Amino acid sequence: MNNATILEIDKSAIQHNLTYFKSKLKKDTLILVVIKAFAYGSDAIILANILKKEKVDYLAVAYTEEGVVLRKAGINLPIIVLHPQIQNFKILIQNYLEPNLYTKKTLLQFIDIANSLKLKKYPIHIKFNTGLNRLGFKTSDVSEIIMILKNKNTIALKSVFSHLAASEDLNEKVFTENQITSFKEIKKKFDASTNPNKPIFHLLNTSGIVNYLEAQFDMVRLGIGIYGFANEDKITKKLQNVLCLKSIISQIHILKKGETVGYNRIFKITQLTKIATIPIGHADGVSRQLGNKKSYVTIHNQKAYIIGNVCMDILMVDVTTINCQEGDIVVVFDSQKKIIEMSKTMNTIPYELLTMISQRVNRVLKKNKYI
Image (cartoon, rainbow, N blue to C red):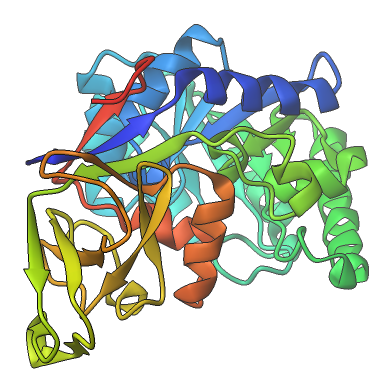
């Protein structure tokens, strides 16, 4: 564990963002929060405990193991496993996690296991592919699924859902509206079936909530939005930043003209320069693409540009004009603006930057003052 480097998680920002999205929804619309991938690079257990107190209706993870970790931590909220593997079905059941079943094979296999274990109305979820072409049944499969589920007492259909492919891109509005129409047709067929169990229907992700509120159905799935981003500048500005990545200065060097910094001697000193060494590197989530003055950290509210290549565990910054000393706080990012800026430099999106933060970086809840 890299205890000199910390990722602060702001509980009040999470509460603010949740309240913001709740204010957009109908009072009876349920909220599912996605905390897969260590809660988008933060900490799934910390997030789950906060969300439990905020009384969200559902959590979602990608894989069974992620759900098991939450159960072991005492999280008792309903948890959907979005991409369960057949070999993990029994572990999933032992931890009362709810599988998303997306092919006939996974559905029938789960039913077989449920029958063999003599389960009673174990909750399952069915996903349809309406255009993302990632996971899900075809829309033409609805009738067959209804027949398969008919009179099955070992399982209970808890929800039916799909996922929008381009809800953040209004240039793809026609495509998204076609997805919504397809999902409405799926819902209509389920509603018309004689199955007494009426499932929850959900389609919208964060950007869907922002742009297609009319399609909120029974529940929405809040992902990147809970962490302070909405894929739309004017909405992101209404949200609060949740994550702050900090470290410290380990050592300060004074270098003369002609000396070099870092591997491959990539950065050459042209005048008397003061540099600071920071104990964070690409193994902690700071990409090599941010080196060689392409990005910066902040020390005493002043920019200190990264010089040389980012090392695995260390990076070096130019602090020639900054009055600082060893042990001082270094801020890698503490705002949505900086996270977006770094993401653009890396030619990626905030999702990837955040989930790159290594698990050896210590996660802590934000306090009123720095370390």
